[in-house]
Image 1 (spheres, rainbow, N blue to C red):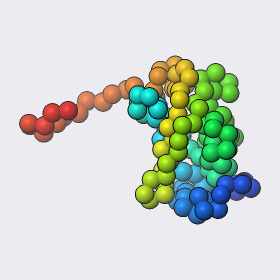
Image 2: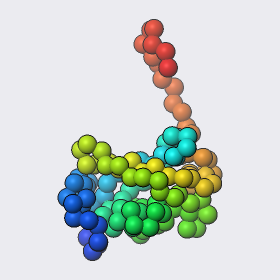
Image 3: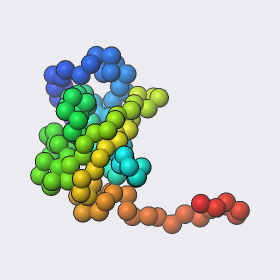
Length: 126
């Protein structure tokens, strides 16, 4: 889905550091402040990041619905932002949140609850 540029008040110094994909989005990896659990992966454009940074509420771009969504607005499972970090390449954000309720739309605490089998080299322990 191709995105249309949205006017945003995101600080130009921050915007200039972002490396967006072809749809103008940056991956947002979300982790829980207390536990460090990786909760989910979502997408942000400049406006979603601006809203997140200025409201303290995690706001994402829904690729399937084509609209902004504040995590918890319909589910009640809110994410209150503790901090946001930009990776060294500028193409991913790490959003640390206080999670209220489940992070996953399935009702699970984290979206990463489907573990896959891994064969480890001999002598390597997890």
